[in-house]
Amino acid sequence: KRSIPLVGFMCGSGDWMRTGESMGLSRYYRAVEMTRTLEKSGTRLFLYSPMDVDQERGRVAGFYMDGKSFIHYESEVPSVNCCYYFGGSKPLQKKRYQQFKKWTEDNGIAVYTPWDFRRLMKNKFATYQLLSEFNSGIMPRTELFTGEKKQVDRFLKDAKKIFLKPNTGSQGNNIITLSQTENSFKGVFYSRKMTKTIESEYFSSILSEIKDEVEKRKYIIQSGIDVAQYN
Image 1 (cartoon, rainbow, N blue to C red):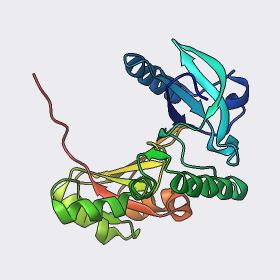
Image 2 (cartoon, rainbow, N blue to C red):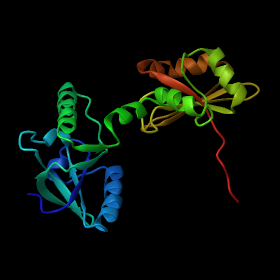
Image 3 (cartoon, rainbow, N blue to C red):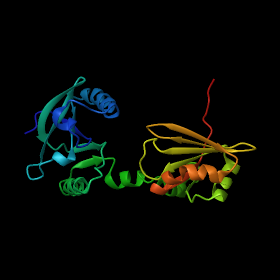
Image 4 (cartoon, rainbow, N blue to C red):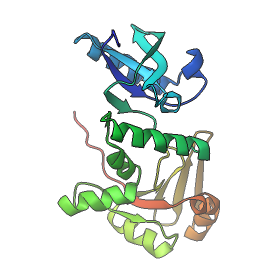
């Protein structure tokens, strides 16, 4: 029987889940803020990996947070969970995660944001299409990137800057901005390792520099929007 009221925080399958020695800053700060909120109601945040769940027993080993420290703990899988982690890239991880997904659905385990909604949100173009059905102006103009200059020209007629983004994932990584002056095109490629700026009179020169990247995965092209400023 669980003696501590818990809300689950599903967040990966790395070694830190078993040792508690290392955790990414993004996860850590989220966990700390959620812990502060939950403590007001006498509830603790319980961090665990879906990969470690014993589905026959309905239990899992993980950590709860005490202040800013992690305490090893084994618990029944909480009935309410938030999903920070959406599964690994390796075939075995994907298979085990799909098994866990079905297990939560069969056993009435709540996961927020819901699976289907999370899958939709990972697809930028599908999200744009859905939201545009309700309000065409709620998101910047977005299309799947074709790599053609005429598509870029259409977007640059309406926006000073446009963005090329991976259609799924990326978290701000592998994004390309394009802009145009009277005499040249300018492209800026952003990745975790570097920022690279390319300027040329010809768009074909810009495209040749980013071709390898945009052919690796599906990209969207999106109008830039002006950022509101307050004095």
